[in-house]
Amino acid sequence: MKLSRIFQILVPKDTKFFELFEKDVENLVVGAALFVKLVNENDTALQVETIKKIKEIENIGDDITHNIFKELNQTFITPFDREDINQLAATLDDVLDCINGSAQRIKMFKPHHLIPEFGKIAELIYDACNELKVAIKELKNLKHPEKITESCIRVNYIENQVDEMYHTAISSLFETQTNAIELIKLKEIAATMEKATDKAEDVSDVIKTIIIKNA
Image 1: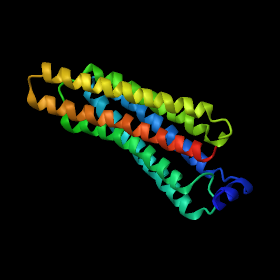
Image 2: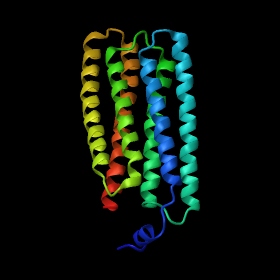
Image 3: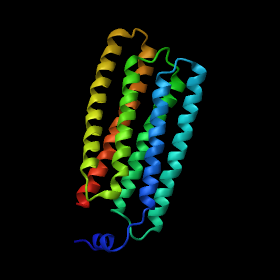
Image 4: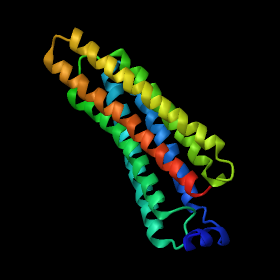
């Protein structure tokens, strides 16, 4: 058994990392909910306001990520491997970056219409973030990882759904969209949205690694 693992067993776990990760994923869920609101909003002024709020949430996420890295540099004994803490913080940040990136592209490109698939994909992004929230809140209790594993499996399933929906949407755009500029705009937004669930799956992979190492 690794010496670091022995220390983790003998020394009481510092709860600050769990608290920071829970705060981080709760912030992520807020950002995902705002994105759902954005893609279902037809009023331009309200869209702009929601995009602004998403950016604020992304800034909060950056601050939390910075605090996690700061604590990591200052803490000798961590609740699980330092590399996994680093990866979990980074991948959670990536998901929110993709959500904000999608919102910013809507702001920059100003497409004439958002296709119906955007609403469905946004809902699935929100669902994936909620599953990550469930999993991360359970990390304090690694003796019973079943609930964590179930949420990670659901995130993987959601990623597959979004992947199929993305390709169907792009195929439909090429068949029906006669304005090449609009097609490019919508394709770029869709690609960034699809990437959000790819990143959510990356988070679930890190969580699964943590479970395996601490089994």
